Length: 446
Image (cartoon, rainbow, N blue to C red):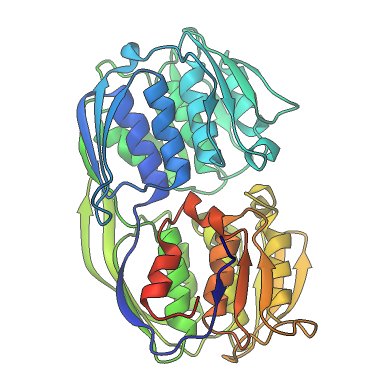
């Protein structure tokens, strides 16, 4: 397939249905599979990461009915028989590029009396897993790894013991891993974070009937083995705010634009992007707020804006870590200099996102300085991205296999002088199948 080339667009006015939240889609399969009864999940994200999680539980004997025939509302029906009904997989479990899948399933599988081999693609196999291996080992788990990286061989056990773990980083994946392990551990499992990370696991555990205890301004969360089985639920997955962020930025930077992003999740642990829009004086509003399955959602309207620079740091970072590449595109269109810091976690994502984001901006013709924990971006004050001086025709940007770099580059192309060619664009399917189709429908030249 030829590399897509995204060119400048004007009058970008449209209502867009955002695909289902990736984090919630993952968790809906996990909890639906270990609960008793039929869990129905609508607006499920059919991205490659979530499909890997689905296949993992099918390999454990869970019957999952799929209804992908209606693109606007993909649906799963998960016929759960409870935790004790899970079967030992006959083959290794391949999780593709999914760090969420590998880390969360490590916690659940550590407390089951089977052996599991978890593998992934080249990118996932380079990402650090000691952050979950170490606390799981403290709980009594036995996990073999390749110097703290995948593949992981988990020797499951019925003898996990609850611990109190003070996490050095605010990570929903680490927290969720230990909460899942705590479902099968004796005693209480407590996780203490330096800052609050996204709390989809806590919300869904409570929704499925497992009591959770919160302490110390919600920086401490505890769980113990439930006395009763989790019970099936109905979940309508909200649109993924991390995916919506790309079109929030598009609405703000493109000329004469107004985008309505429908049914977007606005969980408070995920709305750092909205705080940034406010700080950068973007013209937006949040309307039609509702709450389903303990997850709030709303429509978000974004219009063309005169963007102002700001500083993004500290406790805001965990609430927008996945959105930083596209926030960097927004900052590059601002008046003034934007500073992003305290974002070291970007170095261990699908790529080193500090380095790849800085490289993307340089290729777009932006003055940017890479720092140890972030970047300093000199805004273009609304001028179209000119491209680096040596870019003759289109601006070619290699995603390095990172879906968020690919989509951020595409959004920049909508306000570029020469157009942006996306190399390795296929990785967008990890989290946002249909992304380029949305752009094609809006007469963006691809």
